[in-house]
Length: 488
Image (cartoon, rainbow, N blue to C red; front, side, top):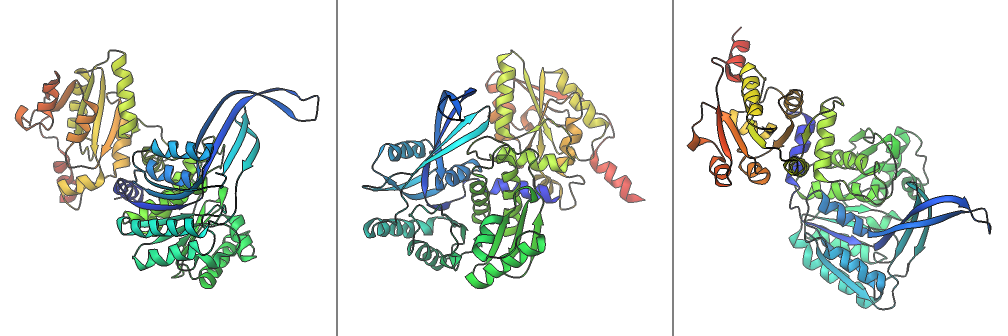
């Protein structure tokens, strides 16, 4: 199984991952308009406002990213008794996957960051905030709620934006309680005193933050590794994952192991919130049982997706899967999509009155028999979706020596056929769940099956669809091909 195929499996394992996120929530406002003149009052652009939007920022964006990769996060933060605080509460409530614990502190200003854009270019940011530490009463509420939630989660992520929620002694106490409960702790740090993060499993500073915290050079691979090792030694943390913008990431572990991960972004429009994406993806991966390196690789891919979007964005699981397959296919353009995207495409086809067909298989070492069945399948419908067993699924069905080709390689071969309109990789042993989701009008399998043995036949017939058994090409099978190859 290829490295990227393993990461796809790890990503699938993140669905439903329980992560506790604690940190400074804020409201991100976006004001969009056009600029066609300079103010006569001062040499500044005049923005004609066309629309506005708001979303969760700060630790709230970490939670949004946790939901995007399939997690079910618990969220503890503090808001003010104000309009912005109520807006934050409403936005959190829009995500049913989040278990919210928003503590209201009277007199506190909920942090608001307002960004002004014209033609996708950010012109100005204006902030309203309170940086004061929490009162003793509110601090105790935060710690009590955190301790209650820790046994229910797989990891704790601390999102420190320096707005007071995590001011000492909150952060050290959170780390102590999490480690006592046996939970790994990932910290997106702030400030220059990283000693307050002692005991954390991973810190995720960017290059500038690493320099400010260590006062060491960070202008080369060697310098970054040295600075990260200094943090590990002096602050007592398990690892440091340094985000390096166009230079990718560097993971340095307490054991001395170093990994340099190249940048994944193909285009960069806006780096806002990329650090939130990194820490969320990394923590969700660790919480679901992935290794630190696997989590870092997934976080690196996710960050590359986010910086290609404008605004405080998130990376969805299906986008990460597509990016991983894109890399495995050497940049080839393919029809390979995730389930959500397939559902959207199928919906558009149906609105045009097109009949959707579905077939599935492992398609390992594509041969004339496969080509014939796919051609017959396409002839029975207007648009053909092929469900492709993942590498892990093929291994369970065919044995440890299969597949011969990775899921990405098999997918690109299928996608190159004119008879195939979409390819959707699924990890289950049967395509039943995928068939239930896509609800094809036509279900096609080879004539070596009978109607009562075709998975999903009863469902398709139940909603008025048709099951087609395609004629086989005699003597063609992947097993026979492998046997001939290994015989000599």
